[in-house]
Image (cartoon, rainbow, N blue to C red; front, side, top):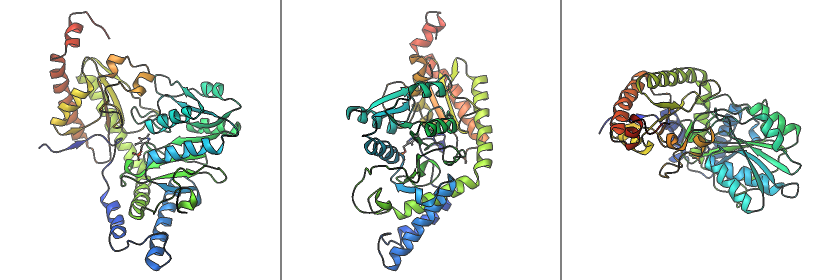
Length: 395
Ligand SMILES: *Cc1c(COP(=O)(O)O)cnc(C)c1O
């Protein structure tokens, strides 16, 4: 077994040791239910509230505007469906983009079946929506704009503050799936006029299965999970105290070290792209630099299949992704790559790497050397490549 070289931080991150240490007491001695009135319940409540303060501070929200969930997908579902239901009498139109995460796209599709109309905005070659398109899509019936902060496959960051300003001007609610952004780039819900936001702890070195929603004071959202009065009646279910404490610790650490990590990771990403460009012919770089997440790089290797590439990399201990973890296993090319104009055949040979805080320059060298080797082998077996060499096929 090779040593694992992990380049898939957009899929999930390893739990920090410090985060685990902060969680341990809440998994062992301090097992109280945060809603109970006796002392071990009250200490659990205090720990949940401290984590709420840590999460609020990280995005410049108030503590009472933060609600814990079981992750990013739940936050997206709750906020989008919750607004749609609460605003049904006012209007039935929602604006989103073509490159959202499935947690948003599938939620919008469900709402279409319920009689909502959804506009899916196009993006340009850099994976960004156009503000003019957004303005043109707004109708009197529009009740929600939901546009992701940063894309999980190519790392493009949307003009969030501009979208927020337009939404506010038209009195339309603005939700952003900020799962890839929180902990990696600065997020300020007040300065950016964000009304609703979802995030997830396992994308910033916290535990899996816990997340948070920001709901601006005064915004009404119907609840998705009904039951007890936890999270001020907005999300029923006994609090995941250890997970919540871990999330608070993880977000605090991510924000403390953001500038430093981001600078180092950006340098590694740029080095990777330069090396691949220099050493591997016939590629297409699908991600950019300015206005993109620090650690995400997406490259198509023409004339080969991404799935075979992943398999061969795995044999060398390299963990990467062909698109998003949520869609691997399906053979459809990525909806995000198609939306930015990558031809179908080229999209099939794509590799997303997402660099994290523990990766080193040596890791990147190992990855690039392996890629040079593996891509050459796969092309040698590829009928498409043979056609290309014979001048029959050009992409
Ligand atoms: C990972 C991810 C999600 C889903 O979050 P979970 O906590 O895994 O449910 C949603 N949106 C984006 C952009 C993501 O990257």
